[in-house]
Image (tube, rainbow, N blue to C red; front, top):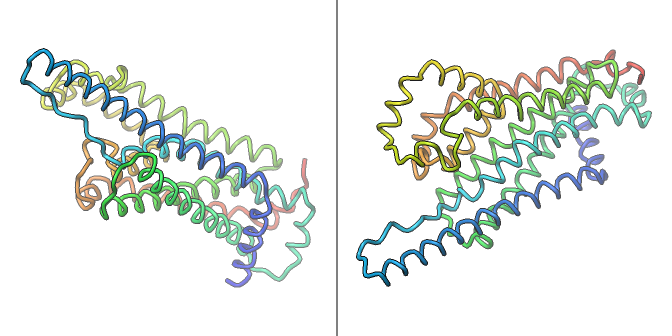
Amino acid sequence: MNSTWTIAQKELLDLRRDRLFGILIIFLAVATLISVGVAAASFRTELDAYNLYVQQLSASGSATVPAAPLLFPLQLLRGGVEYLEILGALFAIVLGYGTVAKEKYRGTLQLLLSRPVGRFAIPAGKVLGLAVVWLVVVALLTVMTTAAILVIGNAPLQGIDIARILIAALIAWVYLVFWSSLAIGVTALSHRLSTGLIVSIVVWLAFVLIIPQIGDTMDPDNQVPGGLFATLNILKADELKVLANFAGFDGIRNGIEVSSVTKHFERLSFAFLGVKDKYNQLPIGLVWLDMWGYAITLAAATLASVTFAVGVTSRRNLQRKIS
């Protein structure tokens, strides 16, 4: 365990000196803050339009006043979650690849392997180091986005809201560890370093962009901004009756979506943050009862990814010559 932690400390020191790592994290943080600002500005625009409409109604003598739009603070984080699921996963792959590639490019691999370390100390230390790094990064992003909701969004937060944000942060950490571990394993297993990066990015393209997009495209309710059923003023009960006639098709569509670990991350985050109206203001316990399957699957996928990285990052694979 001591040698594993020593390797982890080395990774932490290397990343602290890595300018690219700093640039990537700053970019992710800025994008997240901008998303909160854009969402807040969009709500203010909607609220201004509502106030103008009410004034026009009052001027016309109408006594009917529509319900005012409500701001649910955690829904301002939707854009941040989407940036994290796409850009965060890509950055995690870059960092995972870099932990293996740098040892060969810098010529430090032989020195590292000459040390009296255990069979799994090197890969376990690298995974542990990245897990600590992502824990710190997620913690910083959580603090920044919470402050952005209070300052930029001008929205109050309750204790339950903080709990929801912390749960979403934990989910994000598990998700990022999954991608970094996968990149470590794929890079170590590849005969060429460039192949490891390419394969990891192809997997990212497939499971982060392509598969979720196919599922979204197959959903008829996503074909119109704001939702097809909402645009047609179809009640929820009638919507369910319509969808019941396409249960088989919807099952296939949902099956395609949930084959992506990114969709598990997204659905979990959106549920606990209340981004989806179905879970908005719902007690955390009830959200868990509906979403525990996604949580178990995401945790199992991350555990499998870590096991894969530790298992294939052997001395033999690491000692392959760069080609």
